[in-house]
Length: 70
Image 1 (cartoon, helix red, strand yellow):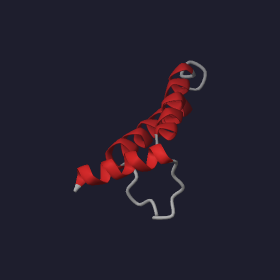
Image 2: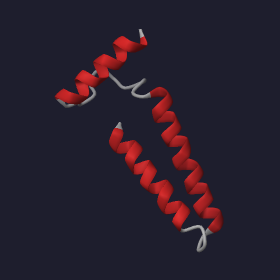
Image 3: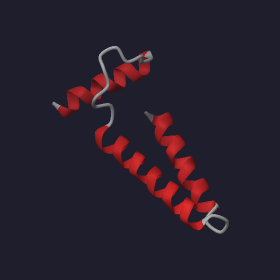
């Protein structure tokens, strides 16, 4: 999850930096990156299957989030 949010953040920053060259395309990519960041922040890992490949630290974090939401 943090990697995806980080990638979307870098994409948003890159889109803002390229506004002078490609204004409409940059604003579209920026808006898409903001939507992705919002969806990840709002919904987290909902919809992930039980067979999702998680490392030990991520698994503990996901279990803590699940306990918190209940």
